[in-house]
Length: 122
Image (tube, one colour):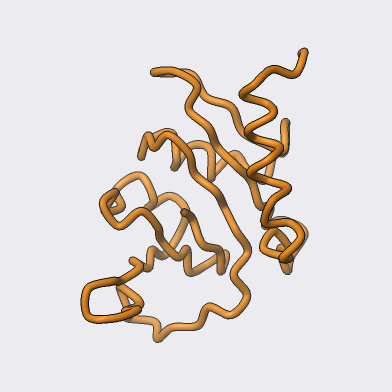
C-alpha cells in the first residue's frame, strides 16, 4: 500500500504525542493507536495490522467518530463504582469498564477512560 495523505495524518497524530510518552502502554497486550474515518464506512487504523487494536477498532467503528486516539494513561485511578471523573463543575470524562462499552459511550463527552486497560480514548 502506498502512503497517501491519510497515512501522513495517521503517522503525524501517532508521532506527535509520542515525544511526551503518551503512547507507552504498561503491558504488551495494550497497544496505543489512531483511528481515522476517511469516508463513510471506510477507515484506517495505525499502527497497521496490530491484532491488539482489534477491540479498539470495533468499538470505535460503532461510535463512528472522525478521529479517535487510544492513549496509555497510567495515572488513572478511580473507585470501582465511579462512572465519571470530574475535571471541574462543567467538565467530566466518562469511565467505561471495557473497550466493548465504547460504542455506547456519550459521544458528546469526546473522551472516555477505559478502566480495564487504563487507557484514555479521545
